Image (cartoon, rainbow over all chains, first blue to last red; front, side):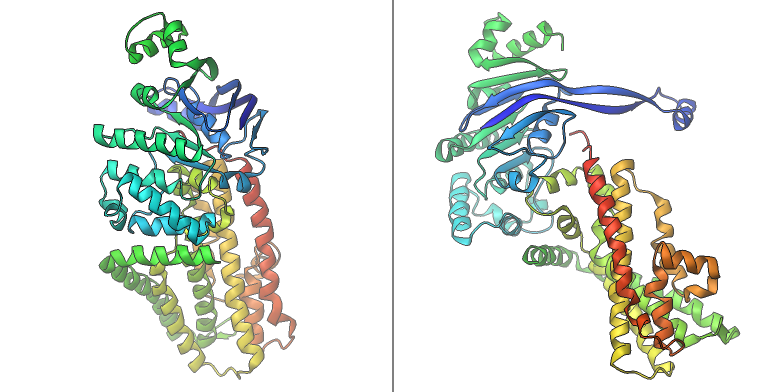
Length: 265
Length: 258
């Protein structure tokens, strides 16, 4: 279970205008601006839930994921994930979670994918029998027999993503964070990834938290949606709740646009 | 340790993917330090002694510093290039894995091409030994091992400081190279030739002299005090403040946008 309580996080951002003279000026007298990435965020997510975490660019989605996965320490507030605070018990906490950053690879570039998997097995200390079972399951579900023998650098984006997600699942995490897992994928790979995530959720009761800009992802995978904008949680409900608030009976994409307008984000 | 050997083998496999590049870089590394060796050689053609140290003694000194520097660079490369690990977001990855950060940064890069330098150091070392008339015994062999171990730890410590500062600046700091590349270059000669003040700094602040000057005196029988033998191990204490600074740095880690 994930319980987030009144979390805030502020970043100090250097600001200057364009131009050479401005750049020189900034060298001596830097102007800072404080940006509230997260402003008093609270929510609870139960075990086995699938939650879509949406909002425009720069709303604070990634910051939230980074706090929940123990990378960042918030300024204030508390967070309890299966009885632990992520940024205090980092090592114990990350054993139970899997994180996929859609834009960054976790596979070693020059070696076949299976070598990366074996390194991850040792990093997470997965027993050999369990590793074998997991690998077999993941490989058959995603049809990876051939792909995992190829070096990562020679894979297409879609193939690589089909390896990234199992790489985060080799140690049976209880919680899976997906940060834009379908970005840049073609229709076939997208659907393969979606079905796979749904399957994993059903089989292992894995809690899944998903950030994405692709509303079809949300529609296909999640029941619950948390909408965040300018660091605040604006809505927390189901897909039909969202359509109700938006007050339009149109496609989900248009509903989201309508919502963004209403909240002025 | 098992995880580290796993990292080691994956890096080895990666390197073997680009055999030509590996070979040429290794040869390049060998030649670069060979130049430095020539520099020393030509200088000693004119002068027979520097501050009372003979040619072979200086070679011995330099080869040991070069060897420990190359070991540190080979295994601690992750810290040396830490600014790139921060700016490309790789450190986020490290934070979501259930292992110590130091182990993972060490494992993130292993620079096998530094074998070129280690070889060069070895050649100089053997040459230096054959030229010098050091009377070898068990203590002295131990001293040399201590010097290399202490030097590797010391240079790794400086790399860690460098990496820890990256948490605050995001970009790397060139001035830190004074302590890494600079120390390697100045380390050619026994520290005492640079004067008393430098010797004091290198004894008490950044303990270069402990891995180089004092044990060298013991090696060439200028100072028979057996304490000098263990000074390189004392220099290893330097890693503790480095580690503390690193821990403070991690607390300040802000991650980069995604």
